[in-house]
Image (cartoon, rainbow, N blue to C red; front, side, top):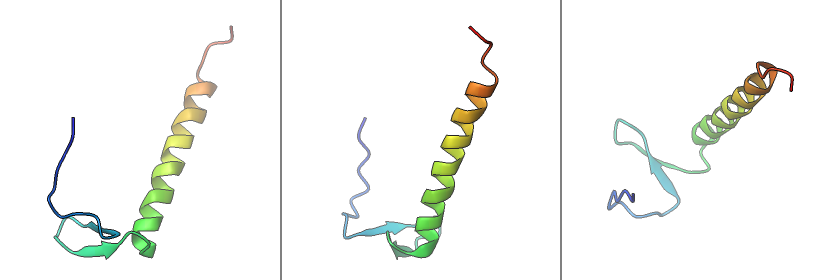
Length: 53
């Protein structure tokens, strides 16, 4: 399923309030880093709670 926002991609992304920021803005970079950390912690937790085979 594709989602079209019709805003194009000029290296910017939008915040919920409509503000446009560069994808290299420190706030956007931080959100990406936190998202990756969350995924990694989920993977670690899944492996820690797996029963021994």
